[in-house]
Length: 426
Image 1 (cartoon, rainbow, N blue to C red):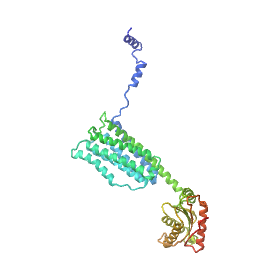
Image 2: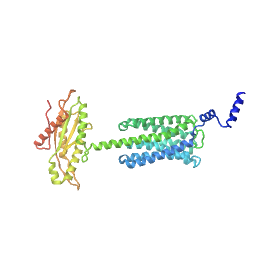
Image 3: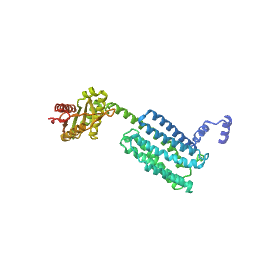
Image 4: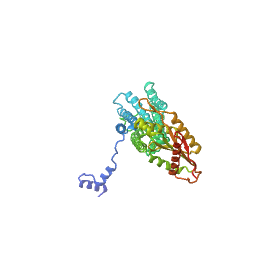
């Protein structure tokens, strides 16, 4: 019996049913799920709308990040509408799908940049994003109105998105706040990948090998496939990283709020000493000074004008002290009407000038009270300076604060409304 006769005999015996070998062959040769334009476009549109809804929902729960989250939601909604218009190409008027879709796909990244700047509290330039959008739409409108090559719009839109993606990556990596957030590297990587993909898509369009996006196209070009896939990936990945950044910003704000005095906004006593100890250990080669500041006759203020007036006076003096400090110094509420200031890299002469300037400023200003009333308050300041000269400090931070406190009592004994400097520890 030949091999063919044997195979026919086996097939006859099995009643024409597929054998195990034939079933395995058919299983491994099944075609994969279709990766066509319609699927990619519709998936990207749904992804954009989902991320927009999530962003608008999160905005209600995060008041301080509300503006940035709303901008992000608008960006995601614009992107979702753009992909939906691309998906409906052939079912709606061409100009609506082509011009409207490209205008929205350019608006999305610009809104993303604005959301990012709003999140960290910076003012971004609007001139160059406007120029980029104008460049992107220039090719689109040129194709419709002046009969430019059909790839003109793809060239300008793709290159504009690549530029915005690079700006997004630079914005995240260059700003000190966003750079310190856990999701910064992931966001920057997404921006870099997006920029690379749309740069490649621009080149393919320039060489004339990029057909227009059409949901009915069963075999999209690799440039279309990759850009559409990355579009959906970017909407998801960038949104997740942005939400992570917003959540981290909120967590830091909550943590910082717990370290602040509720009335004056300066550090609490515990938070001040925690920060001061860390700085104290790191500045062995720089002199450090402590200023103890006390509001004169504060009990009389409360007795004569009420505790509300006393609260106004304390808040006013805290702002006044903070306005006199440098960015490297910091202030805490020591207790009651007394504040403590750490002056970084400050020798005895600088500390003395700081105290005298603070006393003079307080003496010349008035505390504005409700009802257009004013209150005159003065300050007494005690200062102590520690010079390390690169060696171990001669005293602890607590001892330095104690010397400044004794200098404060000396200033009060001298009639208040003055500054006194303690002698050097030795």
